[in-house]
Length: 98
Length: 464
Image 1 (tube, helix red, strand yellow):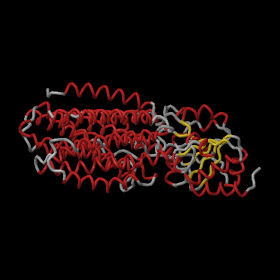
Image 2 (image 1 turned 90 degrees about the vertical axis):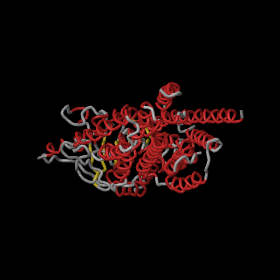
Image 3 (image 1 turned 180 degrees about the vertical axis):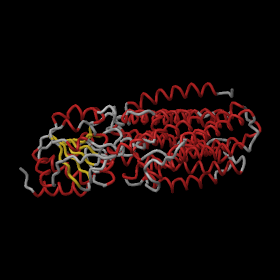
Image 4 (image 1 turned 30 degrees about the vertical axis):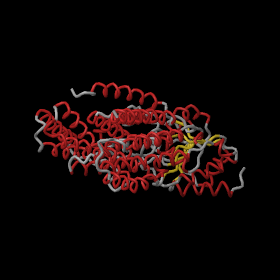
């Protein structure tokens, strides 16, 4: 078993339960923004992609890393952008009348 | 010593990013704080990305910067799509997330290939299989939602055996590779078979099951990112993947419950196929229909109106006209609310976003439970482009394929109005008894055109 595996397993289990409890409370009203926001957060994979690409170990790893950077970074930018656009549209009737 | 300090600083930054991500999701619980949540997420992501650039193992930044520029060029338009295109955009972003995870896993295999332990190989194989199948599966889902591919389920005899056989092949090859990580020929085969399995998995699934499928794919993408975290020993990825995965999982469960179906049934059921035979000779039953003038009169005389929107409203792009109707009726003192069924539309929360875009205040959007508790006191239930989610057969006819599915109980309102093109049955291919009730008025026509007529009648009619 590689070093760190057990640590990662602890982190994974705790994060999954925490995520479950936090996300359970998200109003059904916001389920679409929830999905686009979690997509944007998941795009943190870009961090790994940057490292793989910039380590320049092999040509293949540089190319695959670059593809991953494009895919993940566009998800990050696009995901945050559309989530904010959607949330801006949600107005309560109280605020609208004032 | 310097390297150690910078390593600790980087870890500190990553941990902060994780905390900000969790806050982001926590603040998303209410529309009042949700935008703050996005900001928290953005700060966390920016912090993590900037920190990564200080990683001492980075050698050549040229390609990274070019790729980020390309990501910017692709990402900005994807963030600016029209709200009606949000379901397919979401599917595309699932595909991108899966692609990134799969491709990094593939790279890790080839970088380390002769020196991979069976344990490491298990992680990589699992990660690459899930990432690859989610990639093609999401692309197929996006194609269906964009209507490049047919939305109806595409099925053939023995399909499930073929699909499962393909998956089994990938798993068997992976097992061989785990024992002999050096057999490099097997690796591309696993990738290709997983890509094919993704196509086979989503092709048979129909348009109305998309809310579940999108959520399930969301969960897979999160899982592949978390597995990648294990492969790379990166806790940021483990946490972000776990959060994304549990979010997708929760949404899948909600969607399945809202259709009274199991995961297996959605994935392997190909709903609606069996019912074709039941669609034979149906007696012509009388319906009451009404023109816009009558309907407008009833609506403006009502005290309470509940609008039940469905995918048909999105297809007809009727949401802005519906908001005009909402404004007019509200001005006349009619209490108008919108009852949203969890699976209305093509993804979780689809109807809410469309109506919010049309400026309907979110406190007027109510969920199924509250709608049903108020339904008996409702004067008019106005159904726009929804069908199966209002079908009382789900509660009364034990033999019906939708029996047990929670519905919005429109039939308990005093008057029911249904805007519909014709009497054709809905997705499940089942007749809706609601249409033949003596309290129901069928308003035949295109949703947008008919709502426009209603708006014209009410604003021109001078009220009551």
